[in-house]
Every structure is written in structure tokens, then in C-alpha cells.
Image 1 (tube, one colour):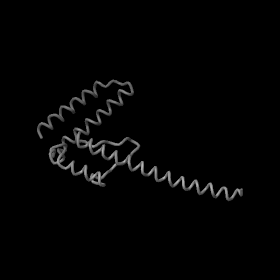
Image 2 (cartoon, helix red, strand yellow):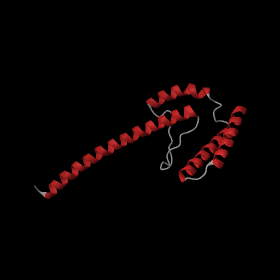
Image 3 (cartoon, rainbow, N blue to C red):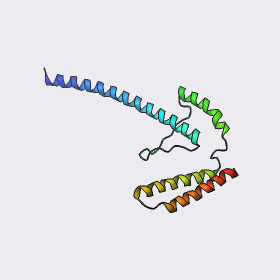
Image 4 (cartoon, rainbow, N blue to C red):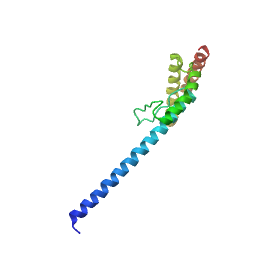
Length: 138
């Protein structure tokens, strides 16, 4: 067989396989993003704070009503969100929750490095106490 014809045939098969793989990867990517958005929405509804993506992901935004399935979940989400208007809407509570999360990260990093965490745990206790008082006042 002619090497040029053989090469062209191989190239066409490769392009077809490449297109098929591209579609499969795009579909899988969309499925994973949809699942991640659903988990993030459920986490936010259940725990009142946004779920942070891992460090390699610089941004993760999603629309609550992006498609047919998302619209159904958005309809079911409306009653639950209207029941909790007092959730971290208070800026003081939100700031304290942010400080608590930062302190928990510091404690985890210190433990991983084998350092003492007593002072950090004391600070975390104080932040949690302020947070409890702020929630009671709201």
C-alpha cells in the first residue's frame, strides 16, 4: 500500500477518534460541574456558608436555575431559603464565621507542621464565643 494513502487514512481515523474523545470529555466535564454545583448549593442551604473550591480552582460560579433539573431544584429551594432570612445576613456574624474558618485553617496547618496549637485553639474558642453571642443578639 502507498505510505501517503496509509498516512492519510490513519490521520482521518485519528481525527475521528479525537473528535469523539473531545465530545466525551466535554460531556463528562459538564456532568461533573453540574454535580459540583448541586453539591455546593445543597451545602450552602444546609450549612449556611458557601463551599470553597480547592486551591487549584480559582473561580467556581453557578446559576441556581441553569437548566431543567436546576429549575426543579430551585423551585424546591425557594421555600427553604425564604424560611431562613436571618442566616449569616448579619455582617458581624459573617465576619466572625470567616475568622473562625481562617483560625481553623491555621490550627490545621500548625498541627501538620507539628507546632503547638494551644494559643490558636484559645483564639478559636474566643471567636466561637463571640459568634455565639452575635447569633443570640440577632
